[in-house]
Image (cartoon, rainbow, N blue to C red; front, top):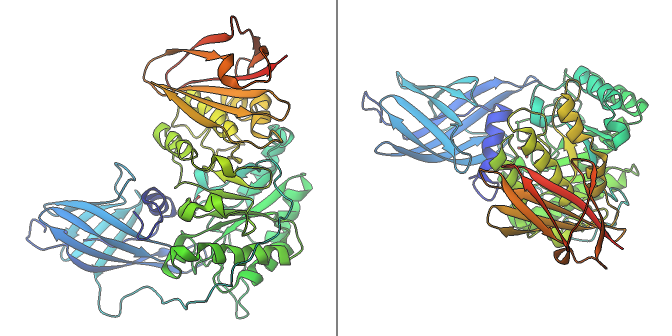
Length: 505
Ligand code: GLA
């Protein structure tokens, strides 16, 4: 896990996706221990800066423990050594090592994040990450509502598919595709640039974009010309998770830059802020940017990204937030998706118009789940009133992906103006989520978590309708269905979903 409270999953995903350089260590075949402090000078970022990592490792037999510190984050790691070969993992991330390599002539020759070669050398006493000056956060006060996001924000975000490989041209073609694919008409309005757009601050502290985004204002104008809105990414620390400059000490200045560019949405990611602030300071630190955004006078949706630390659902709205991540990073696999949505149980009372829990962006169409699983993903996100931020390639999506993302009857559940978040009831492998809707009807979703098809029976009596179930519609088959003797039964494939909208007389 990340030292402090940043989750292991998040840190691992950061390590894998951001491609930060890590150093490493362990006893090798030659008898040399991997224990100690290692430094890896990293690759060059898109703004020309060099990444750097410090690895502090302890070795006990063939087991390794320690801490990886990068510009963007600090994480606890565990691993093993066999002969000269070592592997390091971030707890909870799973089976894929964050760093894997060999001890070669007193150096660690490793592959980080699957494809970034690194060489770590024993660190000298002066080898460390740059120090960051502490800035006291402001006293707490309630930030007034900005009146935005009365239903969960919908759009597209670059991170899940492109990570660091995002640029102006890709964003433009994605904006085009948002229109031509029908996404825009279905309500997907925000085109959000995630991490790695940042340049290097100038002598006045102004943060420009890097060479991948030659003219951010022109890009924003282009996106706006399509009838869409544009989002950007920063964080309260000195560095973003990928190691780029973030907003610490420049909050008002960055908010003004974003407003001048015409930005409509900011995702603000904790990352290296944990190296500067304590978890107890999350609120004033997030409030600082909440105030700074409002001071610009431009309506900017404020998305907090701190992985659910400190019960953010209880105070996110007070610091000016419109939505807040409640989990670590989603991955394009069934267990990750289900794990994220199941963490929403405790957050349910806190969702409502203007303030939403965010179990992370969609993976629909990214290829590592079945279409049944993606239909479940879409249904669950709609039932928990989650932001719907597609994370796939809209330009090339298949007809099936399109049918899932553009299912207007499911989107209507997500966007229901009452803004209630469903909670689950489990019965064996079947999990039932019920969401009350503004017109008095309910959405009911039954998910089959098991490995085989299962029969589900939805009982009208469980739906707390104001009368007997009179009208029911299956939102995936797009057919009206009938409750007989107060119940409706259907077979649900493994990892599939039954999603109904039911109304009373
Ligand atoms: C964190 C966030 C991700 C993404 C990356 C970018 O991991 O949780 O959603 O923004 O940072 O570096």
